[in-house]
Structures are given as C-alpha cells and as structure tokens.
Length: 151
Image (cartoon, rainbow, N blue to C red; front, side, top):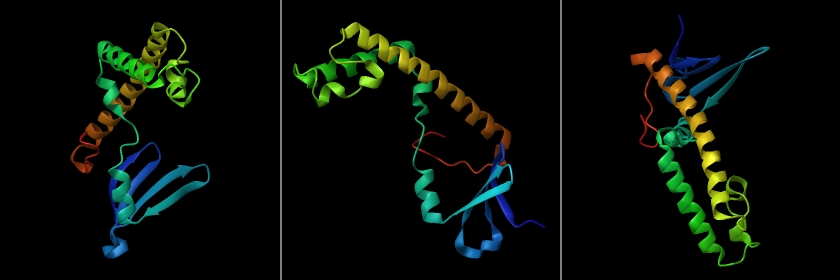
C-alpha cells in the first residue's frame, strides 16, 4: 500500500505528499529521467513560497491585438519621455531587446513590440490550454492551488 497522496502526475513528473513523513508535510517532486527518478523534497515553507509565485504571466493569453498595441504604444511613449533626449543612456537601453533602439522611429519600435508580444501571447495561450486541460483531467483529485488570483 502506498502512503503517497498525489497532487498531480503529468509527463513523468509526480508531485505528492507522503503520509510516511508524519506531520512534516513535505512535498515531494519526482522527475522521471533516463536512469529512473530524481526526487526533490521541499519543506512546507519553501513549497508555500513557490506556489504563491507566478513564474509565467499567462494574463497575456487573453489580451486582444488592440490591448497589446495600446500597451506597447504606452511603453514606447514612456520610454522616450524617460530618455529626455539621451538616446544612448541607461533609460534608452530599457526594452531594447523587445522594442529595438530608442533612437529608432516610434512606429518601428511599436511594430517590434507588437510582434514580440503577439508571439509571446501564442506561447502563453498554449501554456494556459495545457494547464486547463490538466486541471480538467485531474478533476476533483487535483488540489487546486490559487496563484496570483488565477484559478
């Protein structure tokens, strides 16, 4: 008889507590590898800290094209305002990976930002879909963990 109480099992990852741990409430994470399993045992205070941190912001998954464009336009305007004409300073470097150089034409910066966040939205939609499918598959057996207001 197993003393494990599964939280979830998916794609070779098993997250569970074990009654054999007594009152310690340790959360175990077994990850399947080529040579068997690797196990990480997380004390409750670490598990609680991790589960309240939302590592992936899937809110972008629900944004419309118009919302993405508006957010990008606002960022570009603020960035240019913060630069105060210094297109080579630290403030100009902020967002360069996503929007390009601050000295680029505003429309080019907006185009780059919209392209980046539109592609990222597709990735977030896939993550959200997989999450929702997992929750539906596990049904009442999955202990739902509320993270960042998203259930």
